[in-house]
Image (cartoon, rainbow, N blue to C red):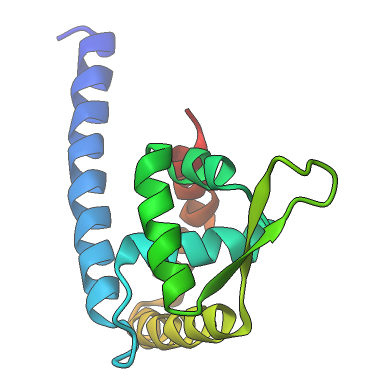
Length: 149
């Protein structure tokens, strides 16, 4: 078999294995969420986006999260009703409104992350040093795959 076809088959197999493993890990991490947190994963993603990027418009949030603006508006409305975010006038463009992470939103996000990070840290301790080193090298590559169009 030509080398190019073998590489394509190998990459397709790797893609399938990575997809399955990453999806299973995501589901497992979702199951380790803080018990007091009733927010959806989409709502938590919005809080995380605001935490990382600061104040954003609904359109900017939708773009970051790759969803349609009307869907983001519904999420932001629910977060605002729950006190997790507030809306403020844009500093330089009076026609725009920005979404701001509230203290309640920040506290909720950080508690949820801490719980899931603690679970993952416990699981990582079960791996060998070499396995953890492999994951350290793989983490930036996975991030690049996840964030590159």
